Each structure stands twice: as C-alpha cells, then as structure tokens.
Length: 570
Image 1: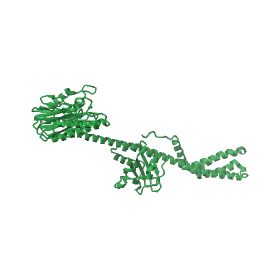
Image 2: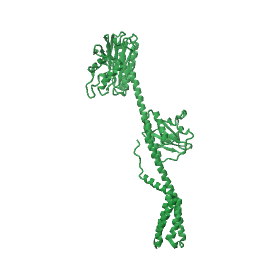
Image 3: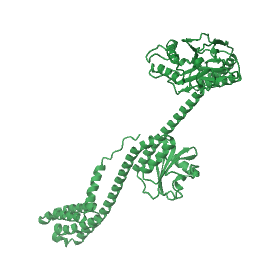
Image 4: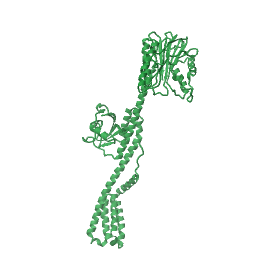
C-alpha cells in the first residue's frame, strides 16, 4: 500500500518566491536602478527637513534594509553596487555638510554596507541554491513516486515469480533512469540472482554468490535503502557482484525487500556515472518501490504455490480415477469423475478395471470416508493393491480380505496421527466372464450397481461390512446372469446424496437417479460424454455445486458393444 502522500504547506510559497527571485536576478541593472531610486526617495525628506540631529539613525537603517534586500534578490554584485550608491546618497542627503566632519565614521558605514551587501548576496545565493535543490529533489521524488504508482501494476499483473522478478527490474530501470538493476533472493547465507535488467547472458558464477560477512552484517543492520557513491572504492558499502562485475558502473543504491519486516530479497540499482547523493525523499521513493516489489513477489509465489497444489491435486485425483483401458470383445467400459464443492480437498473415491488372465474383466469402485490426504492416500493404496491382486488372478474374496487388512493398518496410523480418527472404506468388486453373460460381485458396504435392460433396477444383495471395521469379515460373492442387452452402472454415493434443489433437504436418491439413467439407456447414450450429461443434469439442480465427489463406472454388453473401452475424467 502506498498510503497518503505527505504534503508541503510552504511548497507553493517557496516556488513563487523562487520564481520572483529568478525574475529579478535575471535583470540586475533594473534591480540596481530601482534600489537606488528607492534609497534616494527615502533619504530626500531627511535632506529638506532638520531631522538629522534627532533621527539620523532612521535613514541609515532604512537604506541598509534596501541594500540587504537588493543583495538577497540580485546577488553580491547588486548588493555591493547598492551599498556604494546608497552610502554616497546617505552621506550627501542625510548627513549633508557634516559628512566632512564625520568623514571617518561615514566611510566606515559605507564600508560596512559594502561588506554587508557582498556577504548577504553570497548567503542569498547559497540559500537560493539550497532551496532550488530541495525543490528539485521534491519534484523528482514526486515524479518518481508517480511513476512507481503508475508502473507497479505492470509487474503485479505478471505470472510466475521469474517473470515478476524480470518485470520488477525492467520497471525499476525505467523509473529511476538507471543503467543496471538486479534482484536477488536472500537464501540464508547466499544471494540468488532472480533477474537482471538488462538481461544477464551467461556468467553462471554471478547467479549464485556467497556474500561476504560484511555485506551480511550491513543488510542486517539497515532495512532502509542505502546509497553508494562509488562502488569501486574498497572500503565503501558492499554491492553484489552482479553489479560490480560491470566495470562501467559507478554509483549504486541497494534496497532490502521486506516481508513482515524481514528481508527476503535485495534490489540493487546502479548508474554508469557518479550520481549526487539522493535526499531522504528520493530514497523514500526507492523504499516504496521495494515495498511494491515485495507484495508482487509474494503474490506471484503464492499463485505459483496454488497452481502447483492444483496440479498435484489433479494428478493425484487422476491416479484414483485413471483412464480405464480394457479391451474386450463383448464388453465396453465408460467412466466419469467430477469433484464436489471441496474440490481442493482430496477425496477418497477410486475406480479401476483390468482384464484378468482368464479373459474376464474385473473392476473395482470404492469410497474412503472423509476428505484430505489420508483419505486420498488410502484410496490410492486400495486401488493399487486391488489391481495387483486382480492381475495375479486372486479370488474376489481373497481380494477383499487383503484390502480389509490394508485398511485396518492405515486406519490405525491415521487414528494415532494428526487426524485423530480412523478410516473406513466401502468397496465393490466385480468380475464379468469373457462371454459377457455372468457377473460375480463382492460388496463391502458400497451401493449395489444398477442393472440396465428393459428397465433400471438395483441388484438385490446385502452388502458385507465396510472395510476397516474388524479384521474378520464375511464378504460372500453374489452371481448375476446378464440379459442379451445389458448395462451395469456402478456409482458412488455422491450422486444419490445430491440435493434436488439448493434450498431443499430432499435428496436425489435412487428414485431420482433411475429415470435419468433410463433416459440415457433408452437413447443408447452410454459414452463418457453421456455420463457427463447425466452429472450435469444433477449438478444444475443444486446451483451447479456438488456437495460430494461423483464417480460413475458403466459396463455395457450384448448389442451395445460397438467400440473399445472409453473413459473420461473431469
């Protein structure tokens, strides 16, 4: 945040005074003539009236003020000329005939006025130059601050931290009219070069450097920008090698980039000429620029971290619902996965399908309780273990016992760990023989699949215990004879638990799911895109927000096996 800009109440007055002084200074003859005429005009009354005895000091004071004013406005030459002319007029008009008797005193007064005119003129020039420099610095600082405010959106809008760092250097180089800018990350005892403008080609030794102890101490002692008049001086403030390696660079400014009052980066700028020492205002602008740079870097790093997390999430979730590549003459497979509203919390839904050594097609669908890394890790472990067992040809019951043992072990670790509670899982495994006429199931607490033929019905079978409840469970197999034209839809509870409307407590359930599934089946719409359309219809009913993950696994056989296995994960 830039905050309110400090205001200078007397700035406009100073500017006007300097403008008047510059106008008068450019016209010394006119200023001298005007001063001389004013002095004579002041002295004339004292010449015509007998005031000399009692008020002789008054005209002298007035004339001295005129001399001082002329010296301040016109400089030492105008001051000396006015002092000489006004002194002569004072002696002739104010002292009259007595200036012969008081010649030494009169001469001394004139000499003092000459000295005063010269000295005040010099002091006026010095003060004027100081004020001009101060105002010039203020104007430059204000212009630089305006450029900072206008330019910072250019590097706030960039993407990756590397591109933001390059943009910061480019904007700093243009804003402060410097020849070289480098941005370093402070990593413990090392400085790592993030970016440089102009671009640094080659020179890998400059990209990572080991700072000297003196540089580390200097950075720790001062969190404000510091100016280095000549970086070539051996005993001056230390500047990173990415700057000093360029022999043309002379002056530099280094500014720590702070986050939460801790230096996380260092911004160094240099000029190929000796620069005058900047004022507090100019260094304040550099500090403000460094604050903007800190915010931009933090935002870029946070956005990159979010992108990396999202990528890891998609990859991990894809591993739980992988592409099902099963080639079978009599069976076609389609899948669909869609995350719920907690899409950045890893879910426990998983599916897979393989072709067993005897030619049968085996598949698994499961759901681990809860969300998060523990649930996702258990889901990935169960899927991998089932796949290995299925390819080895183990029986369905042996598969389930092994998966249950794995769930018990992982649940115990989760209960002892940070989660504090155990894990459970529902799993349904199926094996469809090579002819596509029989299917055998073993179910551990998972919803039974829907059989699609002349209608849509749920297969009747009492599921066994969920995995992770006890070490000995009874998961009896169940066999079904399939009709000539059939489909089997396996699903997770995320779709049947969907609300009918955002403000309704009524769930879709099997009553609402069956008509949607039958409409697809009637239209012979059994591809992954068709499953997506089914999920879309459910999702629209609750303001496009699914409370839980939805996983669908559809097998079709008989007359509907018109192509290879298909899958789609969204």
